[in-house]
Image (cartoon, rainbow, N blue to C red; front, side):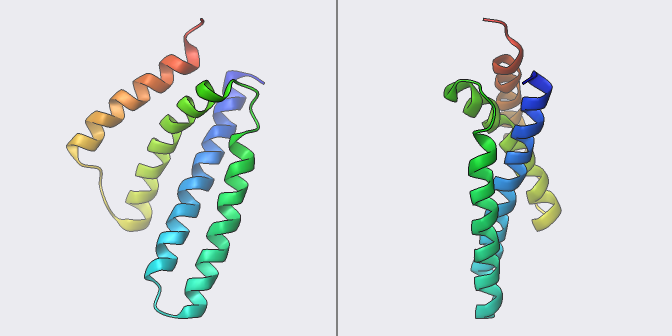
Length: 111
């Protein structure tokens, strides 16, 4: 699997995890029990899909999850803005630059 393909799969996994977390969060704040259970069930299914997807690439586990954390951070910030209207603060942006730099090193540095 090429680096690009792995990054696509890991980005999909990040969307599934952050999306599943957002569904669970929405369920926690829903007033009607039926809506709450629906969000929880959908969130559980999405998070299960994430668990399968994140483990598809054949990289070693440490590298895989290190790069994944970078993609998860970026996707989580996008979902936080789109779904909840929260913009990342300056400390989050500065920390994010370090996270992304680390992810790029783990992805492209030839050991």
